[in-house]
Figure 1 (cartoon, rainbow, N blue to C red):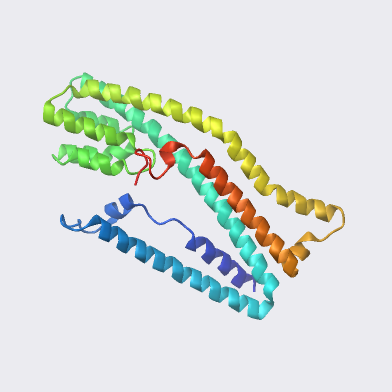
Figure 2: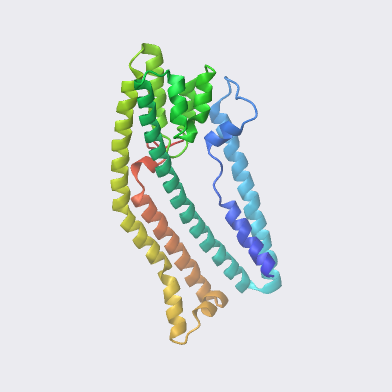
Length: 286
């Protein structure tokens, strides 16, 4: 029975994991997309396959839940679903925090790479050699550096790499590279100014992130307060978990409490999400 409960929780978490990004699909594609193929139709097919996969996993979750209910009673299903929802929320919050830290670290490496690129270009080195030096600081530029040596389309690769969270600054570097190639402008000066601009933007991002950190911490504290309330119930001689998992009114209270906690966390995330992390912002990777 414990194995079935664990399996239910595992499948629930897997069903809610995010799918790979469009950039990862493009990099992992075994063959290049035909020039005339519609990106919209391809994206719709990927969305349909992803939705079908998640619906299948959720159907398996429901089937396992019915099996558990038939063999052990509804209280086990309530406990399994509650644990699964809580695990999903914790994993989601943790993954969002990890993604934010990774994006911040990547933006720092992009700025440092632009500084190195500007210094190399100012020293008179060719762009391909200068990009190789910048790639030692920013590993994301290794592919573009190899393409530059082989005479490939460096701006296109930089734009592709810029789809990764935190690497949005490479989109401006791609535009600067293209302008320097087509007009013969001073690439070193453009790159130096680009690094200064990215550094100023990052300073503003850090100020905004620091300003909303308190609100996020408060929301997480409020979300875990029911745990302390449950411990307080046991301290005064009650049995709140038995009420929540074995009685219909307790099921309603548990469902309502979890729903309100999740909505509170979602609302706080929506209110404290910086503009550059919103899907419709120009600097957000699509």
